[in-house]
Length: 501
Image (cartoon, rainbow, N blue to C red; front, side, top):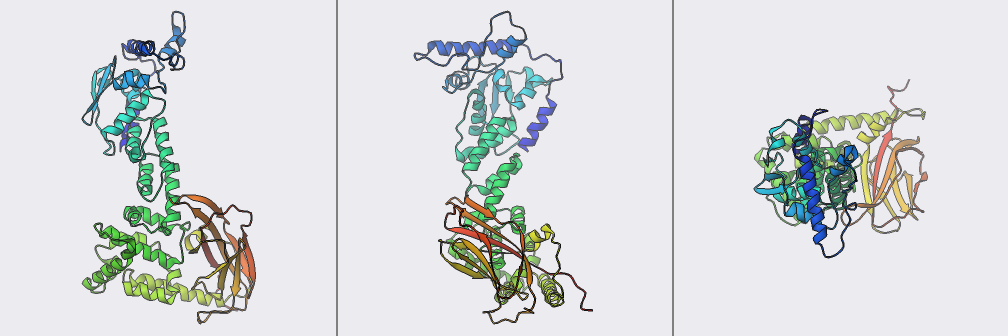
């Protein structure tokens, strides 16, 4: 609201063309220049010249260029202008009152702010008032932040403590101080972590910092499933969690069932904000709480209860098809009674249809693939490479006649279409090659969760025959940093057929 209000204020208080400025402004400018000259003369050590302070005087009777020069504000890095004019308030021509504080300031400096420039140049009563009471439309602005924002008008640079960056950003947005807003953005970039990412994301959305918002969202995609942080789960809002779970960019470690487990913990913390304990106790306590809830509701699915309905949009983003294809995961889902049975029945029906569809394929012609379908329907899984050594993974459930083994060795990722189903399950026909769309992403994260290495294959289509082994990624010449996370997206591609002729 603060940012919106300030922009509207700017439109209302814009002076029409040709309207003269408020009387006495030139006197204020000359008075400010005189104070700066006096400070320089009294200084024992040589200080910056007038030109270094930004006050460029010209000889002559004045004219257009003389007026332009006189309007420039004296600001330097030595602090003399800041101390003499801002802190001391010498030759002040306007008093600003807000949040229980009072600042004796100068219109010529305040007009660097779009907020005050509009206020003083229009036909508003504040244009001629000596004392102005500011109303704070944004509760994020405190007295210290407002002091910093007003002081920035008298300084070349401002020190912004990370603990105050959001309140200073709110003040800078209200006063329309673009340079200070940019400085706040730089501080936020350097201090994104599990403790700040959610507040930074919401603030960047409110105050119009799209680059910071994108950076924070990417941080959450990288770290939501990789960090064991109770505080992070507490601070993720419902709308934000919905966006994260829906994204194919989410770094899923292990399988989709782990996304469900994380959501269950997150929902428990939203419902029980007073819970405290070590992170290792979070999942057992979560399961106990939902067991008790199931008994109290006489077995009704939690998402259909009054408490659970608000979380339905988030759980609808789960890719249940990749959960129910694993027997143990399907049993856990049913036992928890969080997700309604109707959701699962639809998924089982679609999976059964897909198994039949695979058997009806009789050709291997090219398939047109919609990228949005890959994003929305691909299987999400992943693993962590702790060190540069040989590893292999087989994600159970990725079936339909294709038992895919992913291996890492010598900085290469290999796919192997194995016909040996070690799980003892029955696979459908393995006579024909199988087509899959896949994407591999790699990231190394520092202690704060920021990526120090990133690599992405983009989506590719691969046809795998029986027992065929294919190198899909070569990272030999990449400057990799271990440990490294590998996130995979897979989608089995099947041509639609109505049946054999």
